[in-house]
Image 1 (tube, rainbow, N blue to C red):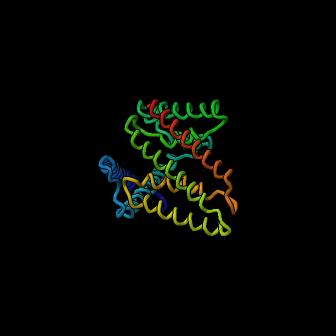
Image 2 (tube, rainbow, N blue to C red; image 1 turned 90 degrees about the vertical axis):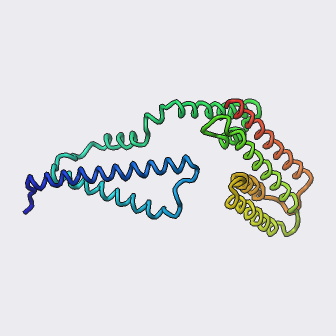
Image 3 (cartoon, rainbow, N blue to C red; image 1 turned 30 degrees about the vertical axis):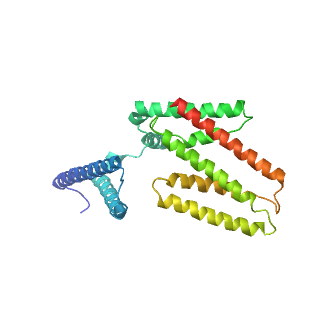
Length: 256
């Protein structure tokens, strides 16, 4: 008849309360399981991603139904807001002040921020506007101090080996059929390094750095014949990057 009686409104309010309780239980259970799995280092099961997506969509539909039922009971409960209030509320929802202002996050920002700024200023003042050291330090960002030293040494190993192997392969491609040899070298090198990345838990990160830095060297433009001057320039550039990486690691370690 187009109208909702008081007993119907009361019944809808009880159902809204029940749905909210169920949504809270689902969210609490999911959050608890995720924290437990993350603490164990296993994460969420990949075989259950479809079920997780289904539960997420069901929860979203339940929230929409709750809002719709509330509007039926009280049409004035969701009056339109000014656009600036909507935008301000959306921006506030992006950030959690409690998490941002926690001591661990402040310490994380200060520790890693100091490392990156120091590396950038060293490259700016001493090495003539060279930003590579700051880029390497940015790769060494870690949540906990001290424990990242071994990981940074692995990153250093992958970066150095990538540039070293890339330069060695690139210097051997000086022939009339350089283009075809270079394409083949890139395909073989990237296949091997990506295989390491996807198949090894211990050396996966090193394989990724091998693919990035070695591939960057192999993809640079060259001539049919590599002159001794070109080889000397490549070796000098590679040594400079090794030097920047070592100093960046020292800056990061001292800051930690």
